[in-house]
Image (cartoon, rainbow, N blue to C red; front, side, top):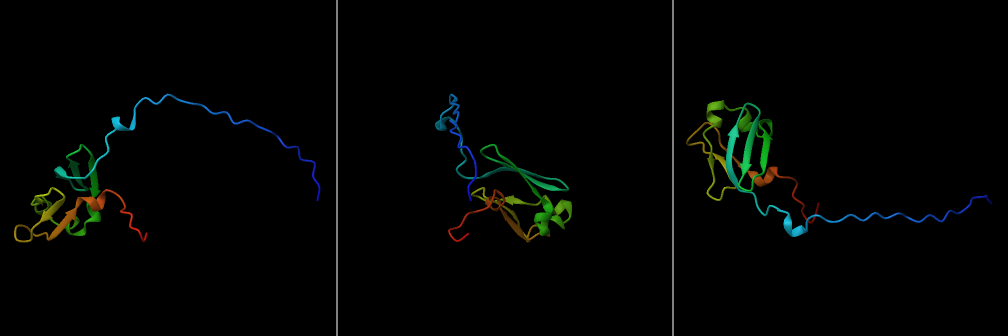
Length: 111
């Protein structure tokens, strides 16, 4: 099959932009530690020590979602500041929330 297609020699136009900041000027978080948290009727709002804010829907955590709002307030932050703990000896909730679980997917070698 023979076609009459003309080949076009196009030169790509490359734009170059000045880089304002080097990589060393940026801040990348190394680990998440809890600074403080607030609960409302819909979310668990977590402020991390590095300034990030995370809002976790309560329905993602059924034990907290279905608990009385007064019981939700009876949390503790772990010593290493990585977990939120509801101690069943101190409230009607028995749960632990590891904040790293809500910061995005963890890539494993077998994913």
